[in-house]
Length: 146
Image (cartoon, rainbow, N blue to C red):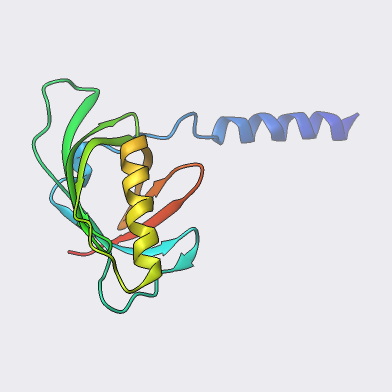
């Protein structure tokens, strides 16, 4: 019986320490920052020609929950567009991208992955100097460059 009481108390203490909700990344935390891609789905990016990157700029809208943000970068091809960051999800519906074929297969795959992620919406997490864009299919991890 004593063990049951102790276990119950321990559970209550732990429950009080759990973070009830994670704060969403805000547009102003990303603006005017550039990030270099380090790994895809936990595997290091090994490209020789181009260092894949993403950067953010732009003004915030007047609506407090939805922020407009400009997104640009390069995997193999350059891309850019105006997106919305809402509750930790970034969507860039009108994404423009150049269409050259790269000699490195990994970069060609990254072009398609970043395009799909941004158009459909990706969860954004920023922890210190590490940016993560994630969907159910793919996770891209970047490191702040400046």
